[in-house]
Each structure stands twice: as C-alpha cells, then as structure tokens.
Image 1 (cartoon, rainbow, N blue to C red):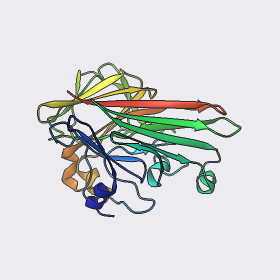
Image 2 (image 1 turned 90 degrees about the horizontal axis):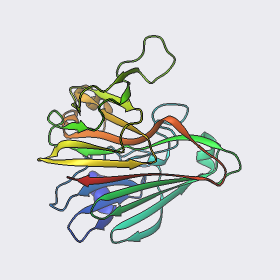
Image 3 (image 1 turned 90 degrees about the vertical axis):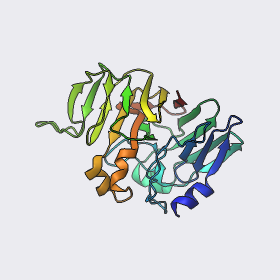
Image 4 (image 1 turned 180 degrees about the vertical axis):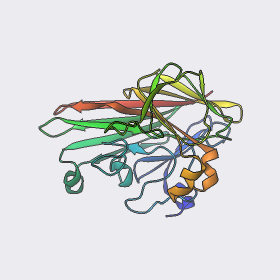
Length: 281
C-alpha cells in the first residue's frame, strides 16, 4: 500500500469547524489530523512501509504491551496488525483487537485492547486494556505521537522543567539497564539539537510543542499514562530507519504519552484506561 492509498483507505472523521482525522485499520493508527485551517498537525513519512506486519512510520502508533525493546517485538505487536471496527460515526471511530494464537505464542495472556478516537474542539485518543484471562499480567504502553513541525530546530517542548529523565542516547557505564543516564531537565524549554531519546519519569499532566506549525503550538494533555517520551532520530538516525527520508528528522518531533517507568499490573477482569487530548493553541 502506498502513502496515498493509506490515506485514501483510512476512516475519515470530520468536525463541523473544519478539522479532520484519518484512522487506518492497520494498527488502529491515526495517520492524519488537520486543524480548522486545513493544516496537517501529524508527521507521516512518504516512505512508510504499510504492508502486513509492518509498522506505519508517523501518525500515532499504539504501543502495547511492551514499550521499546525487550522479549517481545519492539513496541509490542498491536501496531503491526489489523484491528476490528466496533463503531464508526462522522466524528469518531472505535476499534478493537484481542489475543489469539499468534499473540499468545509471544505473550501468554488473554486480553482485549480498544482505541477510541473522537474529533471535537480537540482530538481525543483513548486506549482501554482489559484482562480477560484468569491471571494478572504487567504491561507498558504509549501513544507514540509523531507531530509535524516546521523545523525541529526552532520548535521547543514546554512543561518538562525539573522532571527527571533517562537519556537513552547516553548508556550508563556500569548497569544492566537499558534506561540510559538519568538526569533532570533544567531548562524551561526543551530544544532539540541532534538525536534525542528521553523518557521523562512523571511530570505534568500537559506539555506543549511551541512553534510547531507556524506560530501555533500543539498541546498534549494525558491521563493514566504518567510518563513522557521525547524522541527525534537526528539526520543519521533517520537515514538508518529505511522508511524515512534522512532530512525528515527536521519535520517531526515525537512527544509521547507513555507508561514506561512503572508497568501497569492488570488483575483478571480489570481494565486500564490511558487517554490523551491534542489541542492547537
């Protein structure tokens, strides 16, 4: 599937004020969000791989049940599979995926995961995980937002001052952990100069990317996650990905609502909800 056909076949959500969202079956992946002026707010690589078992590069990948690397495929397995639609209205869509033989061969648990996308004055994305088995399990999760920016060198993230973070570009010298060096954000504005891969532990409910598109900011408000991830591959990293033009690192910045530091323990018949609201300011 090409970049154009990916957008053409995605569910189209429209708001009377003029904003739109497109959501793909594959990965329950939000691939586009335009504001009321028609400007795109999410980055989507024109070289993204969109075939079976491939992950879409850009938009909002759904990460579950593992963030990052570990015993499972990187960032889990729900982002590379097709989901079922359970409801579709003009300004909202809900999708679901559940365990099956393939997932249980990798992760021996019974579960369902739903994604509810609603377009109003803001864009709301809600993840709901349920334990449908008879034993508890732990998981990590994220909404891996790729935001479009005019130039990552002039954009800045506000809201993370005084928050501790793990810098994964600087591995600790003596540790078995993959967290990287732990530091504290000193500056009020976080700017990007080269590769960045940080997990901010805790922090505020809301952060914002200033000077994202034009003079406007993109605000992210999250509940249920607890951590923030900020990532940009830099030129060299983007060129090594294989599904992103090397210069596109300048056009994107990932600021992610995540549950990384402390996994969720989900008991039988229990559910967990993580929700983010994206707003143009």
